[in-house]
Length: 303
Image (cartoon, rainbow, N blue to C red; front, side, top):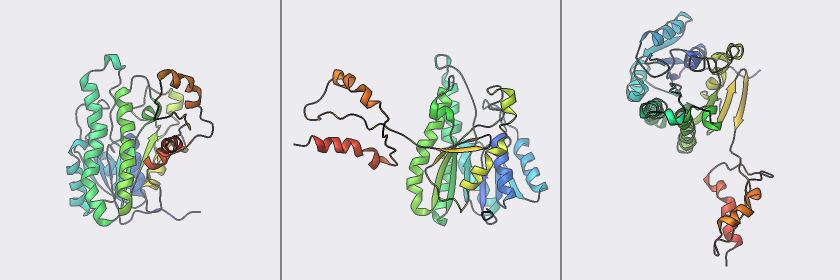
């Protein structure tokens, strides 16, 4: 059996922790010894209203079980206040789980600016604000773990979720870049694409499946990614129903054309099968590896 994962000297912020996945994350972190900032504005799943009781109830659960936690009722768009609450309450911040989110599902031709803007504001701007406020403290102490919550709707697309898919895949782009910037300061950054039975997915998943997709089946991965034992960074993990899998980009080897002579749309059409053939596909890990085939093509035709 592996060694017990503990957070006895660590402070964890979980946003959107008043219910669903965030609540499950907060409870499990506390069970493993973390001091937890339970953030939740208490709004609806559509981003409307506010209610302090959601976060307060989770804090009460943690304390009743012998854990340590404080409630925070700020919006994630006021991320600096959330981080300051952690500093005022516990003197530090070590782990940040960006979990807060809303849904404003509509097909694209019916979508209004408010639907697009509010989803962006909560998911992308909110995650940016909290992470940006925590980042200097993580750098200074030379330790940090940041987990972003992406979605299969961003990875694969989903009808009626152009705003949500945009935001969720955007968070993975942020994950990849912050992983590069944070590595030298021992700040590891990963993303999860969870499938859980929560108020945000109720009605979207068949009831018999919904009941099996317990939020508690997501949290063990999140707690591991937040631990000192985890050495992973820049990862994206699909998780749900007791299953976890890592996702990576795959790209065909493509087709090369002579850059000196140029090429036509007809030339592209003639090579389309080769361009889309994933036989022997490449799996670039960074921008340098992504340019490998292009640079080889330039060298091939160099005069």
